[in-house]
Length: 428
Image 1 (cartoon, one colour):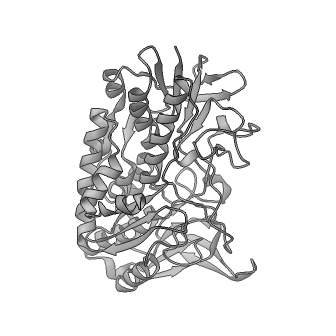
Image 2 (image 1 turned 90 degrees about the horizontal axis):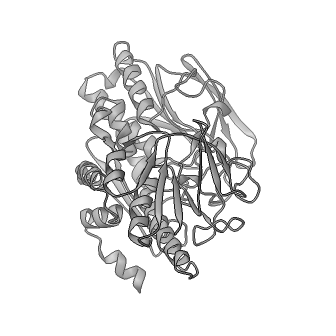
């Protein structure tokens, strides 16, 4: 009999538990540990920030789903992970021992690394968490009473750029609907070396598509930019040359700003030699297994992936839903193998499929694999992307409520995009 603990219950953790349930033996048990008993569909946070969704619209009582699946569920934050003892200490003073651990915590948001950044004591908004999105909505409603310039983007070290682009265009759509767009200059500020880099060195023609869309919507942009500090109504931004020197420093006024922060591993995982890198991300091999502690696996945003290559300003690599799903499936099979005395043999495909909603249009892209060179490098634009994103939201949330282990992103996205032939490309 083995006890498997899944630490985290977001996108990666929830489906990790469901897929493990299908791979373990009858005598094995699963416990999910998370700081929040409610699941929030993070891709809809930009809609919450402009009032197109409410928190309740994108929330699922995942504890009830876990109970129906026969999975133990503890909604208590982890305090310390002790890999040498195969044990996790929790914030309520209790501890949980494990035979196998799957880390699926997502990231900690590093707002504190830039003076004045973030919604908690800072001057910028965020759409990384539904609570932040609610705060952004309150700030946006107040902003609309007295329109001023808007800044949207991602700071140095960020590794998730898609939501920044989405939110910029969703804001632009909402401003037009309120008939105040003409009063609001908009600037996109990013650490990427060019618009549409996305931490992936671009996918298909994302550079051309996004630049064209920004010109069409009268948005300006600053790339290779480093946010020096943020004050009330003012952001100081440094544009960086290829050799790392400062090209220009600009004080940018704003009435509303949303900047995605850099990520790091959560505190209970930082500083553990052999388990985490200096940023606190979990080190894994091609089987999602930690090389030092063989009974620990990790999936999702919390894993350590080196950047695509040197850029004037640091850019991390995103871990998209499709990529995470492949990590989850591989991990579930590999733990199933270990439980039966076999060696891990499954490797995640790490493909990227993204539907970036622009409010009334959008851009979709497919990268197979996510990290170049690729077999498929495709992007497209149209109103259908906005409709597909809505459909996908409903599909995904219904599956989470049911607790199915079906590969959500692969099943839904491939069907909506009409590109089932991509599987054939992979298979040769």
